[in-house]
Structures are given as C-alpha cells and as structure tokens.
Amino acid sequence: MGCNSSKGVSETSGKSGRTACNNKLKSPEELKGWPQFPADCKSLVSKHLTKDIWEKYHDKSDACGVSFKTCVFSGCQNVDSGIGCYAGSEDSYKTFNSFFDKIIQEYHNHSPTDNHVSDMNADSLNCPPFNEEEAALIKSTRIRVGRNLAEFPLGPGITNEQRNQIMEKVVQACNKFEGDLAGTFYPLDGMDAATQQQLIDDHFLFK
Image (cartoon, rainbow, N blue to C red; front, side, top):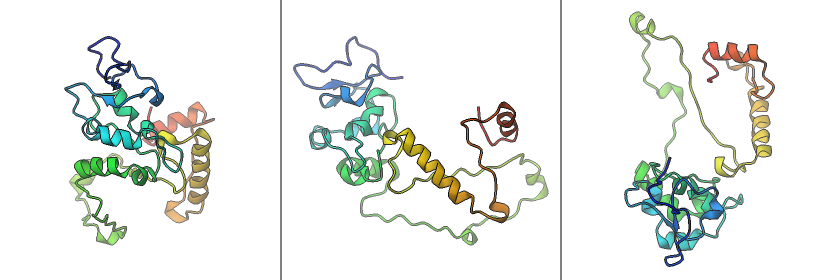
C-alpha cells in the first residue's frame, strides 16, 4: 500500500524540512518534519494536517502518553487511506481537538457543538417479525458491538498488558450474565484445534 513513485521519498527534505509520506516509513518517530503527501492523495489526514496543526501538536502526547505522530502515522504510511488517523485514547479527541474536530466534522457531519443522542431502549426499535418465507432465508445472525473502557488507551496506544486487563474486566462482567445472556468465554490463547474448528463451523470464529 502507499505511494512508491519516486526513490528516497521517505527521507526528510533538507530544504523544506518536510517528511515525504509513503510506505517506506516504519515508525511515527520517522516523521521529523511536517508530513508531505503525494499530490493525488485524497485522505482526510492529508487535507487537515496543515502546517499550523503540525506545529501545534507534533511534539505533544495525550493523557495516556500516545503521541500525535502515532495518531496520524497510519495515513502518512498508507497514502491511499480514506481517513488516515486513529485516536490514541479518549483524551486524544480533547488534546488534539483542533485536528480531530475537523476530521469528525467532515466524515460524520458532527460538529463540536452537536450532541450525540443514544436510545438504548429496545422497545423503540421497529422490528416486525419475519414472515415464513423471509425467515427461511436466514442461516445465522450476529451482532457485533465495539466499545472501549474508560482509562484505557485505544488501539494505537494500548499495550499487551492493558489488552489482557481489558479482557479480564470484560470476562468478569460477562460472567455475571444470567438466563439467555449467559454463555462461555473462549480465549484464543491456548484454544485447542477441535474447539477452534467447532467455533468456525458455528460461525462464531473467523479464520
């Protein structure tokens, strides 16, 4: 992935002081100067990572210790990204708000002054039962819910130790479920081949 149309483009230009963006970049620390994207790059990070934003945040980290460079590194390395940035923690949205507010505004059309409205009442859903013909078309269904725990970094900044801590907390919470919500937790680490295959066959685990 990325642009490799010229040689040596991962180096920082001595004249401009900018770092060319491409798949030769190996770590956020290589972003020595204001990132320079290829002319045909259309990612949101290339659009909103202005010189002013770079100067404001390039040497800053959020409350969890995740650097701004880490947040934008994916888009600098993969210039064919659509967005190209990842918050390092919940605090990234506050610490680097001048940058992330613009990304969220354009991608989600959600401004800093807008309010997010959640309705977790299942009675509000309009879900009429399937008729017999429609029901026959369904082999299996699944619901995927992605959430984060307070006081833990997000993907770009989380450690293996913290991932294990999150797993332990989630398992403890799930073990309290009763009735049709009760179930069995299957950790990938140490899973035997037979259990793995059964979970694949039951469409709970993907290769």
